Amino acid sequence: MSIVDNSLGEFTKAVEHFKHDIGTLKTGRVTPMLLDNVRVEAYGVKNPLNQLGSVTIDGRSLLIQPWDKSVIKEIEKAIVESGLGLSPANEGERIRITISPLTEETRKEIVKILHQKTEQAKVAIRQTRDKVKEEIVEAEKNKEFGEDEKFSLLEELDKKVGGFNNQVKSITEEKEEEIMTV
Image (cartoon, rainbow, N blue to C red; front, side, top):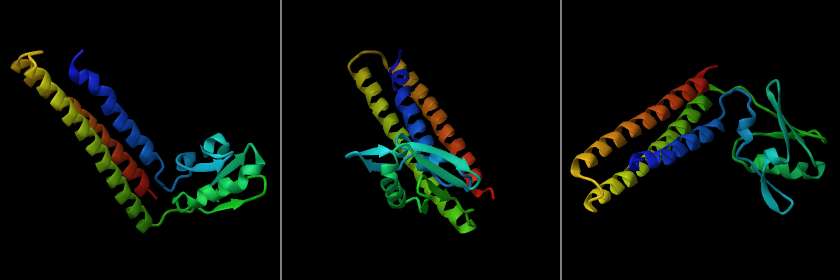
């Protein structure tokens, strides 16, 4: 197995993190993934919201049904403080979050955030590429293989990086289309 093959996991992790990260962006569609990054202070620790109750879709609303009714106030507070711009309505037994349709201006703002996250993913891929490139050069200096193999490994690395960058690009394009679709 080559140095390049050993690094594929890190590249894949960067792409998977990017997918998860942009999954929380509002698209105008109601999805429980909107709440994936919400952490609730309950029982002395911060818990992911989905570990404290079920999140379901009801038309243009998300319904949060806590398994323990005593944490409903903490869930409501965590949603308000999450920075997602959501307004939870406490209905006693559950919390309802109505997702209003996005305006054109809001969609453009979300696309800007998407492009920032895309750039972060590309930076992560570049950093991994640079680290692997250093490993290849170092291995050649240590006479683990010859100059020809170094160049073929660098070429293989560039092809792999190009593939991962293309994945990020196509994911971004899909998400942008999803955001801009009314």
